Length: 494
Image 1 (cartoon, rainbow, N blue to C red):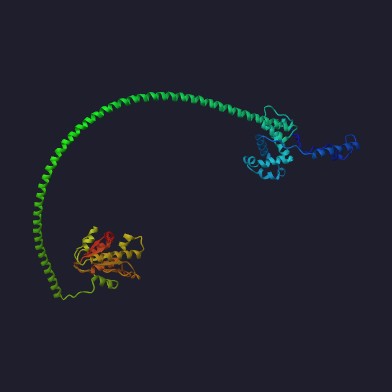
Image 2 (image 1 turned 45 degrees about the horizontal axis):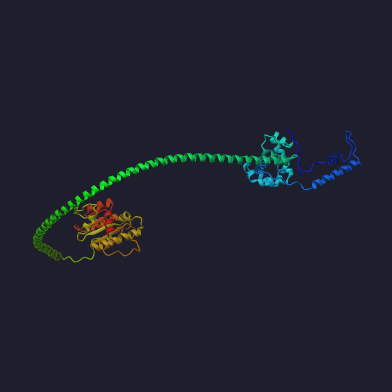
């Protein structure tokens, strides 16, 4: 469709006189046109003055557009805006032209509307592209007519952009059609709401009828239940009278049974007195028996004392005969002094007198023996019982616990730790506890076996270690090996 230049009230139309001036400045036409006279020039000057006066007059204000028409104008402009050359796009709209299609009309609507109103040249460029896309409808709008089947909003938007003669009438007619359509929609909505209210009213009436039927049925059921309740009440009254009669009979029977119970209680009291008399006689006989047993025990104690006194005097005589003086050091002290420089020798003639047991109570039994010697594998016990502590804290906790055992039992206690040399800065050992560290080239296990071999045959020596090799070694030398758990449980009780 050939594009025609749309009419615009705000654009100045070219004057024929201007065209003549541009073509030759009053020269005769090459094809033989009439020569321009002075009168014609004067008339042209008057026409130009009138055109300038008309141009200087105030243009008519923009019409008030219905909202659907305004939105359609913005949408048409936003759709063709990216197709314009960059130099033809106004500066305020160059950033809007780069928006996505769905954001261009929504975010750039104020700027687009302002440019369409204030820039007629930009509006004509947009109109030319929009009319090229609308086909016959655009041609009809340019002619100032609106097809009857056309969308009034579309017609008003094209008329606003193209601005043919009578475009304001087209916009007003389209606005009236839009308003009429809106009024029709409102009327249709009102009719639809009225129909809905009528439908709801009919439904409510039907529901009310159903509810009324339900209430009638419920009333009949309640009346029937009321009759049943009355009949049950009469039956309950009869049952109550019968129960009261049975209660009177039960009361009479209770009085009779109470009399029998009183007689039985009297008989039981008499029997209790007879039993107590027999018990007193039995207690007297038991007292006599206890006195006899005490006398017999006194005799046994005298015999036992005499036997022990004899043994003690025999031991004193033996010590005097052998000329044995009290010793200042114990066998373990000699090992503690020289265990790093001397090699031990296996004591001959030691019998397999050790008894292996894992019973925790066995430790208490062995420590109760006279002059017992407790030897502890230090790190073997601490790492099993409280290995989360540092080595210094482990040693301190074990030595403190062994001091309590030594104070309770009076036995000799020796604890052995692995170490290349003796640790410095150790706290003083508790009374009765000897703390040893193995020397360089010797382990704590070897030092424990040396301590056991140094003890005399017959003295109870208890070695606490969960090391199977240590337990087997000390058992061969007559010691009593026990696991580390037995000592840890003993320390936990302290």
